[in-house]
Image (cartoon, rainbow, N blue to C red; front, side):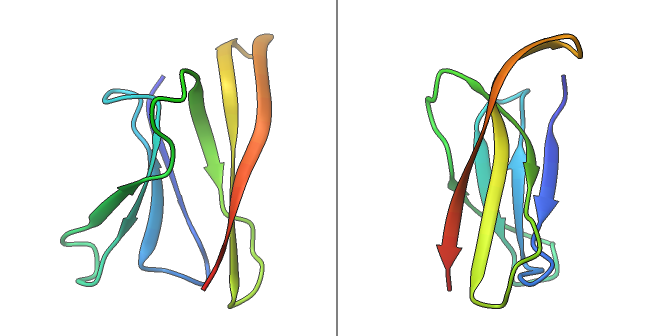
Amino acid sequence: MGGSTTRSSQRLRKIYLVSVAAAPNRRAGVTCDDGATFDWEPVTADSGMHNMRPVVPKWDAVHTALVWLRGTYTTAQSYDQAVVGLIEEH
């Protein structure tokens, strides 16, 4: 299983990344130079579960929601997951 990314349509400089190769945890990255470099901050750490398939639904200019699946995913027919998320005001 690889990693995945998503971004907000309102906040184009911020992306959310899951890198399973490093650890099954989520990070948020902000760029101020059109993607040449990013400042990374953890969103999840040492959760003990896989965090996958991030989505940022379209909302408004003041709020950003980040939702993802947390749990196990063995096959398309064998999984135990919950939808979890965070809401940011800016």
